[in-house]
Amino acid sequence: MARSTKRTLRGAKKLLGRLRQSNAKTARPGSGLAVVVSALLASCGAPTVATSLPLHLLPAEIEPAPAELVGQTLRMRIYVGADHRARVVGWERELDEVVALTSGLLHGGTDIQLELSESVGWERSGGPLDNTLASLVAQDPGNDVDIVVGLVDATDDATASFSALVASERAARHVVVRGFHWQAESAALGADGESLSEAAKDSLLVRRRRHKQSVLLAHGIATLFGEEAALGAEFRLETASMERDAGARLKAAIPLELAERAAAAAARQKPAVEEGRLRRIDTENLAQVHLLLDAKKPGVAWEILEPLLELYPEHASIADAGCLVAEARDGSDMIGRCNTAVQLGSKTPRVFLALASKLGGSQPEQGAAHLRTVEALLEPTAKEWRDVALSYQKLSLASSAMRAAANAKEVDKVVKWARETKSRYGVHVGVPLNEEGRYLLALQTALKEVYAGNFPKSTAASKALSRNYPKSIGASLIRCEIAMHKRNYEAAVSSCKEVLAKQPENSWARYLQGVAFARQKRAATAIGLLIEAIERDESLEAAYKALGQLYRKSRDARLSALKKSYKRIFGKAL
Image 1 (cartoon, one colour):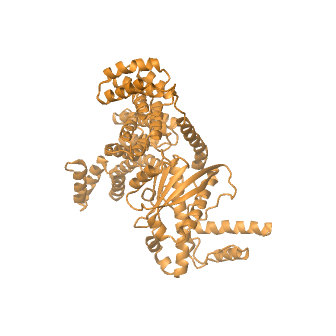
Image 2 (cartoon, helix red, strand yellow):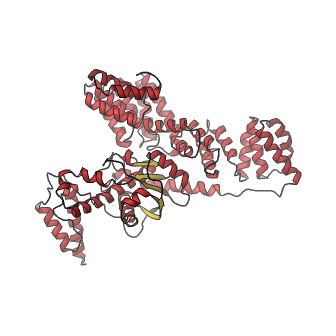
Image 3 (cartoon, helix red, strand yellow):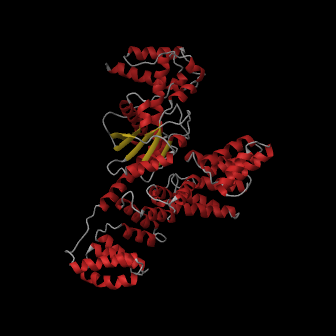
């Protein structure tokens, strides 16, 4: 094709793309300009869409990434659920196309490209997204790829809510995406869809399916790296690229996080140091030490172990025992002995758990690093996962606690805490993984100042959060609370909108907005926001109370169902 023809083709495609994204009032189906552009594309040998298709129903054109890989490449493994494989004819080919479009969405702002390393059939299809995500994390830790994706069954409607369609586990680099519900999406076309031939409608729905799956996957990947609002607050047919500033932040963040992950993995491969083989009697004595520890007799264990430590100062197994006995005795030498075990290449999870527990209060980042090492050492069914999840909770690291809880038993309270913390305070939005605890402490301290009426201090804290965590929701959430307490409800709504722009699923901002609208006598809007807050955080008691008051005032029949839900969750009457 001649160079001038290629330029003409590119220009025509861009013009048609703008038409497709415009409002139906300015780009009517079959408009003369659309016909001219389509004819121009056809004359250049490009594939065309029938001019009878309503332009406002077509998805935006996504500029594909360059054929030659440039910049950072993220390798993905995608698990495809049975439902999706059954619904999509030629699903493997379409999956390649979706990955290419997703790569195009990401590449424009970040120079990041995706590479599909492997697609695997997956028997898991349904259930809540959080449970599916936890199952995926447990099944495949993704040690040999950068991202693990699960593609599962669709919802029962044509929802645009990212929270209903995508779930991401930032700490573990896993994403779950729901499929495309053909019947619901077809019905959503309305009268325009009914006027199309079956062939035209099928062609349109396939294009919309590829576009929607690409945007959802791109949203999930951006969320993994702290940019939850990179593609807006919800899915839109007009989405063709990510928000520019979000792309710049991702471009800086992704290589750093991948480098940190690689360094941590390399450190875990350090071989254990053994100074010769133990004599038979010493092997038996070491076994006796562990039996005494299990029997909670650390004093007796120490009497047997102390000579072994002197005889084998650089033996990894004996150093491990020294750490564990010192922990059980609550000895002042515990950190030193455990550090010695680590330096000798310890592979014993309890050594790192001991260090994490001891250092967590004074050195939370170091404590978290030891817990990540424990995760790398544990088998999926190991009993220590519960201790890991609880330790992450003590460090206020919600994302990491949820990841560990996926393999643990009897940690429902940890999972509940982590979900509430993420939903209300957005600790995973614009905050480095290991600083979630530090950020949460700063935010909650500032909120206490607000509730005490100390607005100068809370305002200063808001500015500090903005400086230290400019991509987080913290500063906006504090400003919203301050405005609420000053009864400046318009300012409160505005600040809470800032929160939701960065974290669309934040429950606390929705609750505050609902209360603000209620006090402005806008009951219908307030009720909608409070319902949304409860849907995202069913333990948000204040939202129930505010919603109950509105229902009582309007004598709304839904009050009865709300009372039942409140009684079930909180065990008392509303």
